[in-house]
Length: 200
Image 1 (cartoon, rainbow, N blue to C red):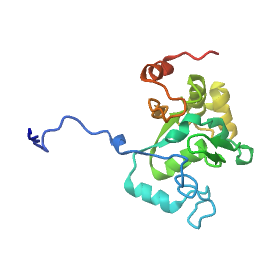
Image 2 (cartoon, one colour):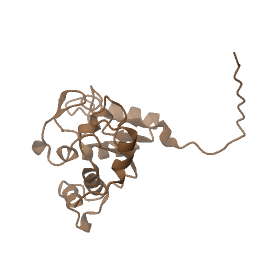
Image 3 (cartoon, rainbow, N blue to C red):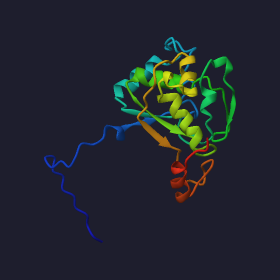
Image 4 (cartoon, helix red, strand yellow):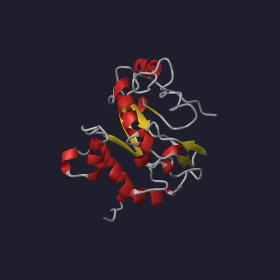
């Protein structure tokens, strides 16, 4: 049996390590969102319903980036259901974890939560049950200026978020090569999907 040997020289550096490698993610699974980071009735909740104790712990850890919304959950995520007045949001069956999703915590809430923790946002798009056009609509909602004439940027402004979120890091689906994933795709299918031009 061959013996492996490794030499570590602290003075020999190739490049800086991207801090994002130490990132995390939030998924609508178990207590991660509801009663985890968001619990309006909790004694430690702030004015938006975020757990201040959790925010302080995330800040202490110095999490550089957080991916949202998951995880397997994103493969049936209808982002439009998660924005706007909470009383108008639709409850939807979450096919990944077989639960009902009330959508009382969504994209706008996550942006605010991430800002309070000092974490950058990585936005995941649904490439399981949806596709490129829906992803582009989400991109407009998050990043376009309301004055551009974009329907989705205007929607964001109408919901009380005038300034674009300017999300720089995007995740195209989640574990799409896995047969457990809703909308599972083999590697060539997944590779072609982001390159497709959406029909107007």
